[in-house]
Length: 400
Image 1 (cartoon, one colour):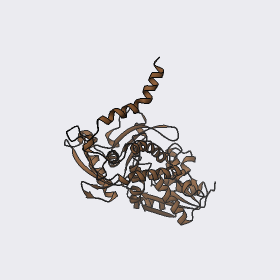
Image 2 (tube, one colour; image 1 turned 120 degrees about the vertical axis):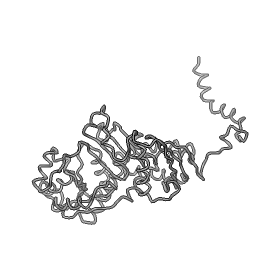
Image 3 (cartoon, one colour; image 1 turned 30 degrees about the horizontal axis):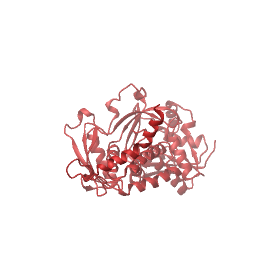
Image 4 (spheres, helix red, strand yellow; image 1 turned 30 degrees about the vertical axis):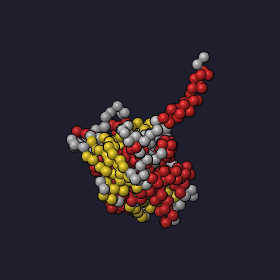
């Protein structure tokens, strides 16, 4: 089934992506497989992963540190859009896919490959995200997905790999399917496939159980410039350090756990557990700062844009024309979203308790009920008359 001569394969070091290497060569006649592992802060030792690819038959094994780009070019634009899929999931895993796709395309062009490949199965969202993103970036590249077509069970996949010297997992693999990067963790499968079953504490790594969290709240001040977080508690921080520190602060208070039934793009409902401490806190704080600095009509209109934006990311359309157009709108709205938000972290919850900005549209003289009130109360009567006129006319015409 010869489809390509030279292939760049997205590589994680797991069973499926390791078996993809001999499978592409033996079954599909690929001459050369180059693997690419992206360091997105998943915490794995990447040197052993690099070596495993070579042992599995890769001609070259690339490791790319993409953590900074992941935060600045993917996470922060999504934050500016307050992107929450189905109003709950901050897209921590989904955001990594267009970046990995871009790295694959760049590597394919550097090495003269005529195809790229990934180890996604046919049931998940990631296959769509990879295939569509790659097509958007380079429509001439072939995309190969061996695991979508080989029809092997996990046991058969392991046995196939052993024929080519790929060691089977030493320990019994986890019952869960876990994906991790510096923005968070996603956990699915195993006991979680029963929606009635409460997740065991063992599935969580970044967040403490409520019973183990401090009995005193912790206050954190988050500063933003044009919708981008730049400082914690008055200390300027680089994007990576800020995310990392906020993950620890919020995770220690049990914040950022999500347990949801999610609608996958391929039509399946899936039970998903997410841990996204920093991202969850940042979205709440950013949204609050927008309420202080954006006009009502922009703020309300942006809510609908955010819903669409979240769906585009989830559905693999990061590089689509609509996403690009919405980026321009969101960027414009963020010009005035600068200031500081004070949040209280306590027992699994984040509470916004204060906010300030040089661009604040809040006017104490208009809002107060005290003697300093500058609002013209007499103007309200005429306003109400005009505002309610269509309703009044409708009522008169339909009441008899």
